[in-house]
Amino acid sequence: MTSFRKLSPQELQQKYTTVAPSYARDQGFGEIFFFTRPLRRQIMQKAQGRILDVACGTGENFRHFPKDSLITAIDLTPAMLAQAKQEADRLGMKIDFKTMNAEHLEFPDASFDTVVSALSTCTFPDPVAALREMGRVCHPEGRILLFEHGRSQWGWAGRWMDRHADSHFETVGCRWNQEPIELVKQAGLQIIHTRQARLGGVFSQIEAAPAL
Image (cartoon, rainbow, N blue to C red; front, top):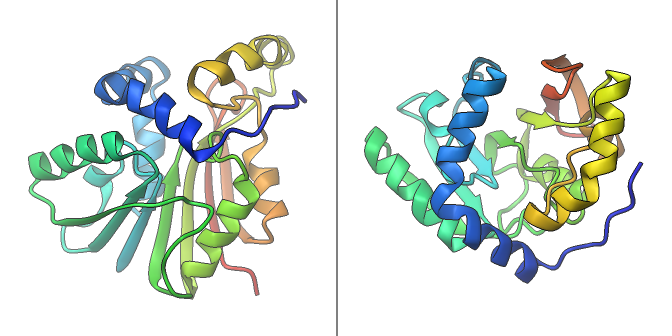
């Protein structure tokens, strides 16, 4: 597995400030090309109650949440949050937005019934710390819902991802050949259900619960 340098929050902000104007469009193209919107919808529509969307990006998860939910959305990059606010307005949803580091969530323990995140653990400098924080702020009987991507189980595809991992990381700070299910295990969260699909299991749906 490739060894990546650790980006600072400032470096991540800079990278995602640059891509923010085109991020939603690029995500849309990706969902069409890889047919991943149904996968995202299947896991995100399980969210209920008080919902925290961690690293919400430009708001791709919002359309899948119940309209009557109490939603808080955080991201490290103000430029991404500005795009997410536009998406919330388009959907007619009232969402509380906060600029925040996922590795240091500024909420009390057990603040939310559901904590969600999508395509984000690949960018957290310390993904295990961020996942532990998600578990901390989730109610003990709540759920942590993740839609993630990682290394393909197809030999040739996985090797191709490994060869290009460094250049991809330097462009957008994304470790695309990670193993997201292993990260969840390392964080000590209880895994309730997982499903891997598309291109040799590149995309993962993970339903987890806080550590006992």
